[in-house]
Image (cartoon, rainbow, N blue to C red):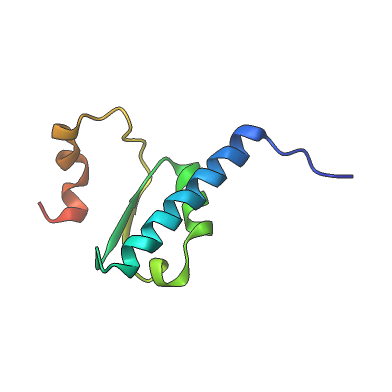
Length: 85
């Protein structure tokens, strides 16, 4: 018997994989030295699972928050601790 897969969860996992693909491409281009993951708890877990070893080695912090609704000008306040601002 095949386990029931929630289509929304599957889509979120696919999105995490796409994000990791983009991060991997940026890493190859030396676009960053360190990586801070910011996502709601479930997505953060999906990202952790999808990360490649080279990306995992560059993760310096993880913040389990949903900041989608936060305005750009307010983002620094939420990331100050890890960004050294």
